[in-house]
Length: 114
Image (cartoon, rainbow, N blue to C red; front, side, top):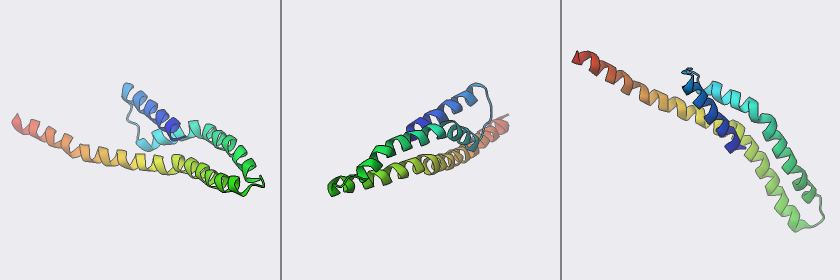
C-alpha cells in the first residue's frame, strides 16, 4: 500500500514540476490518498478474509499465526495512509524551509556584487 501511494505522490510531484505549478506537499498527498484509498481498502480486506478464516480453524497453532498477521494488516494499512504520508509532508516542509535561506543568501550575494 505504501509503495503504491508514494508512487502516486512521485507522479504528481513530477507533473507539478513539469507544469511549473506551485503545489503544496499536503495537496499532493491528499490527492494521492483520495486516488488510492479504495484500492488500499480493497487489498487489505481481500487479504483479511483468508486470515480471518484461518482464525476460525480449531487448530491453536494456526490461530497463533493468524492473529498477529491480522493485526499486521491493520497496522500496515493505517501506517501507509496516516503515518507515512504525515512524515513525508513534515520532511518536505523541513527540506523546503532549510533550502529557502540558501536561496535568499545567494540572491543577497548577487545583489551586493553588482
